[in-house]
Length: 521
Image 1 (cartoon, rainbow, N blue to C red):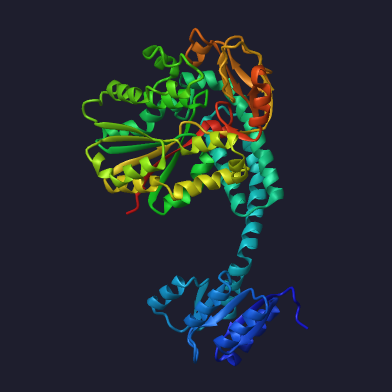
Image 2 (cartoon, rainbow, N blue to C red; image 1 turned 30 degrees about the vertical axis):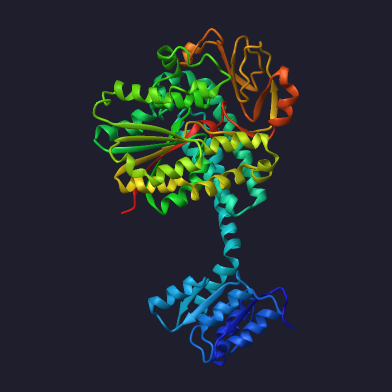
């Protein structure tokens, strides 16, 4: 009696009697091989019992293999079908692939070929998981050493964060809960160690010692050389996009472009009014405040604190001596219809040397998720956040814009202004009524918060932060904390656990991608 746990294979060939040695070989390898000499009998078998795969001869008397394939796919769309043929014509291969054949073998075949193709189609996922588990455990100790090294180098942390993100994505595709829990512990410990480095070294970094570009150095490092070289540049800033999300988009990008991945580091607070202003100004926020004294008057209005972005970019070009030689255009893309219009009429920008687009979708998703039960169900965790960003990007106007810009010989530079992290624990802040209501950072006077839960700056000038009459203290959340304010305690306790926030200190908030794209030749 045959073992019902074995994987069942149907081999369809009008000369099946000649394949007996191959069939015995597969049975010795643990497969239950059923045979049919024609398509009608094969379809009857597939209708009557659960089959794991089909080996299908392309040339048979009566109904040929392609016709049988079409009927099999109608019955069981996901059933793997491996076609075997003497015909090496490219058109036949393309026809079979177009009909969603799983694999293709050309006669003469040997048993090892058949075994390999079956393993790939039936056990490939499991084999991949096993290989990934072995590779991760091999790297586990080495990553632990890197996490615990007492290094202030931002390049060190960017490389480590990239490796951790890649493992997160690997386990998204091939879930292994036990290993994923180990990885999450490593990521948590990496953030603890990174916070320590930020607290000890941020003042030095922001004053010039950082070995990676910070927000205010991004244009000088990645954009200015191309503009000075006479190249046309499209700078795309995806608000709140994290490094792991960009890595999730990379397979889509790599189909169309050759890409180089670099990094930048968001300044504190990791929030749009600070990090993005600094990016466009090419300068720290204390100097921005001196040029625009009203810019930070209302810490409750992110929109008003970013109302000078276009001006900051124009100032940057003038300060670098490019205002006369470089024509520029700055555009915020608020909704998809606007993006589609830009893509459709991209030829309108042909005379512009420096195009800058800001896209807010990822940031809006993070904020709206806090207020929507439906979005919380759709995006319950980090993995789903990455996947929904990928789905949006794959179907968005952005790819059209990038492709059209590449066709017009633009150098494409994609980056973010800050990231975000998932928060879970509330941290009570003692402060006066003038204090901002931000969730991962606050500005005000006489702010009091436990050191283990936040990083406090009481002398903004040393850290190149604006010091206004309204606020002289800054606090930044550590770990997975979010700030609670006594006046709205219940609201904060209800709305913000398990939400994605930004403004504080973490690898996801601070270590950001800079991708330079070139069209594939």
